[in-house]
Length: 329
Image (cartoon, rainbow, N blue to C red; front, side, top):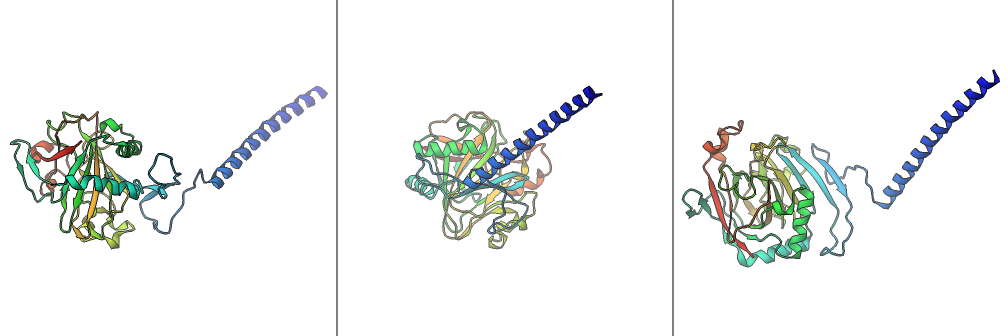
């Protein structure tokens, strides 16, 4: 009988010992979390007064200065803009100095945007796009290399899969009609395969207009915090206001690798001020540079209605056009 009691006592003691270990482990984990929060290494989800609660979600992180960066950047955070298309805003992705550097680098080389019929190879002016632009060769200098590495980290797409940075300038009245960034012809997909994602970086603020609009997005357009500040053009879809340093990432393909027609997007006319931006197109595979020409395809909104609800017959529904630009080495 005494032996049974002794065995029961040992089992109960062992049980309490295990329970105590679990409690101590939880205590130490809580203590570590409190220390990390106090040091600013870890952040709990917060709601900022400057970003009212909407369907958008925010992920914030505190940035620390790096000896290799130009200057210390302000707080950075990522917002989910939409799931159809998949679109995200990375606030303060570029520093003010980086934005100004890209603009000054591009200014002497800007040329008027033109449209080229990929069947005839002839260049012609188009109302689809009225901006001026140029390309910077991938890895051109150390600053561009750092920006491109940052883009790769943001998108999880290798640097080698990206085209060179495109710098664009829009003056008052200039715009870019809604179009797709993906290709619908075999010629443009030979190099790197299909375009799967775009990172659009805003290099300047715009006093009025110049928004990026997604007219086919499946979202509550008026729920964005900046709705009342949008132009009439921007209110026709889900829109983003240009803000110096911000980067907009959106995917041209769905997770199942089919083309996403909801990625239709355009640049609203600039009403007041100037708009500078930089675009990085990311491909499925490594993108190898040609010596002089980098091409792209804008597609007119008028043809969108025929294919908006179907993934079949894209190539037959939309004519193939490509824009001609020059690479600056």
